[in-house]
Length: 186
Image (cartoon, rainbow, N blue to C red; front, side, top):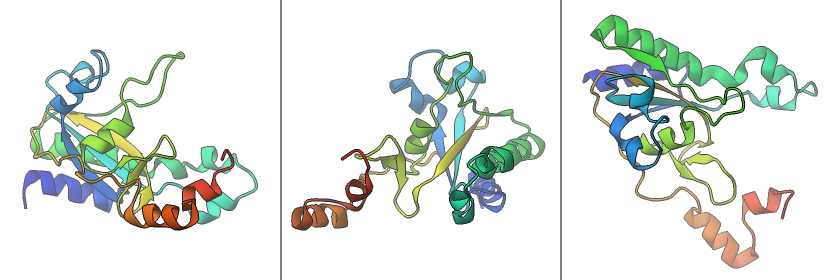
């Protein structure tokens, strides 16, 4: 098992449903200076991304919507990231940091988790919403870490998840798709 595979396995055992790797330099083509992995961790080589389903079906049905904030159901992927950071630093001696993804003081978030997921081969953008869809699991929540450790990167998916062939066929027959049929805006 390679070091990259070992790190992914740790992420999968600790809360990640999927784990992928992107080269830190892959971000340079898409984001301005100040929002690149190297701007957050000097010497960054790799970005490891974990995705999880987030809240349980029961949590989504809870009439008290504060539950999501109180329980942290939407942070499972972050647990995997923290454990992988510790694993990288303690096992391999490289630096690792949880990638910042939330806006501060009204500013643009330091790093896009959506772009990280795409570059790590974990999904593609949806045509109907500003989300990333995984080919097997659909909508996932993503978090990432940045490390100075050189890892074997995955690659962006070659085929877009959306629209999927069944959705295209359904649209041709019925003039709608599952996401369009459920959308309150259309």
